Length: 283
Figure 1 (cartoon, rainbow, N blue to C red):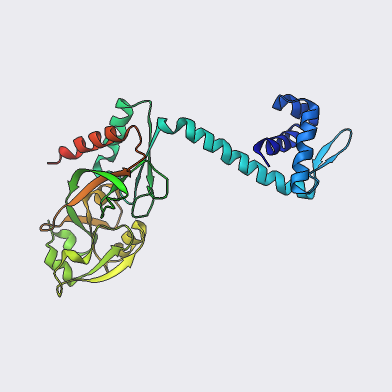
Figure 2 (cartoon, one colour):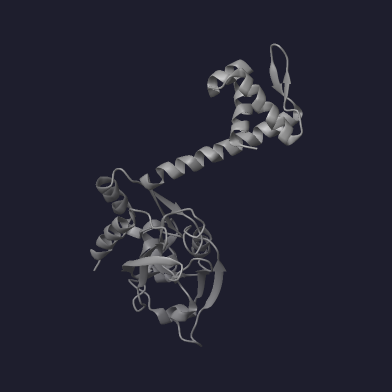
């Protein structure tokens, strides 16, 4: 079975006749008839009821037609992506894109590279969608698999504490790492940047785990938990009921761009240069 068989079936049904399908496909009417007959032989079922005036799908034809439309749409999308993929740059992230630099990165990219459409994709996996084939580059704030991915360090972000807005700590200018062991810490098990290694053994806080930024924020808003996170989260997730305060004595979080080592997008180095420049202004 080939795509031409499916295109022929769809054209016959959509135009309502073999004659009009032949005109649409650029075939002879005899070629259309032969192609449909070949498809019916391949599938072993009759697909169309044919009279001198009408053409209607059989029960089997209705089912095959629906699947044929789906397969043809997928094939067309594959061709579109293959022929226009270099004109788009997809950057994935698990939580907060480029933090407070996100909007400026998008504006500058549009100005400098108008022929390369930029799309940001949030995907809650350790590689922000890169391993799943959803993006060309990904912003990563967690551990790197340097054997599989090439990478560039573009900057660092200070850590902060996320609190319920009515928490007594929300009135303070900053929090110290050791104080958090008195509280319950909420941690995103899949993509979070915070681990208990920030604290020495025997002085670690109780932990509650979540698997998504929205659940993480919801747990904090109740007041029963606090979170530790890069400043990017504070920039991207300003929510009623949530307050962010600086964590004064913790190491900053490194921010990397990663990409497939053997299949880099042509615009990779331009993206690295731009984001490095934006983070460099924080220094």
